[in-house]
Amino acid sequence: MNQFTRSGAALANQVKGLGITNPVVLDALASIPRHLFVEQVLAHKAYENTALPIGQGQTISQPYIVGKMTQILVEHGVTSNVLEIGTGSGYQAAILGRVFKNVFSVERIRQLQLIAKRRLQKLDIYNVQMKHGDGWLGWESKAPFDAIIVTAAPSSIPAALKEQLKDGGILVLPLGTENQTLVTVTRQGDEYLEVHHEAVKFVPLVSGDTA
Image (cartoon, rainbow, N blue to C red; front, side, top):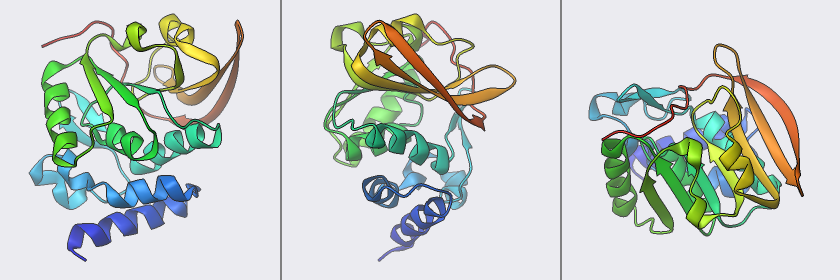
C-alpha cells in the first residue's frame, strides 16, 4: 500500500464522517488518486477535504461535495446515462465513471477538457465521453439523461438541462450567485420538483465556450 492509496482511504473515511455513507461512492473516492487531478505543487493538499485551484479560474471541488452529489444520484436509483456539466480537472467525471455505466461530460474550456481526457485515459476510465461546448446547452444529441450533475453554479436553472432529463430523472446543481444552495430537481412529466439542500460555494457556470 503506497502513500496515495493510504491517503485515498483516509479521505474516504473523512467524508464518511460527514455523511457520505454509500459504499460504492466511498470506494470510488478511495480508489481515484486525487493528486493526479491537481498541479504537482498542490499534490500534498490533494487528500484534504478542500477545493483547490486548477487554473483558468476554475477549481477541483471539495471531496465531500463530490461525494454528496454522487450519493444523491445513487440514492435516486440512477445507474447509467449521467451528464456532467463542467468537466474541469476531470475528478468528478472519474468518480462518476467508477459509479455509473455511461457518463457524458461537457467542458467550455478546451484546454481543461483535453487535460481531463488524458487523465481519465491514464486511469483506464473509458466509459466517460467528453465534449467541448457550452454547458448551459447540455448535450442534446445524447439526451435524455437519467441524471445531470452540474459542477459550477448558474444564476438560474438552465432550461435545456431540465428538458434533457428523462421523466423521473434528477438534476443536482449548485444554484445562485453570492449565496449558493445545493438543489435537486426531479422531473415528473412536465413538472419539476425542486428541493433545496445545504449552502455551497462553486465557481459560476459561464455561458459560451472558449479555446
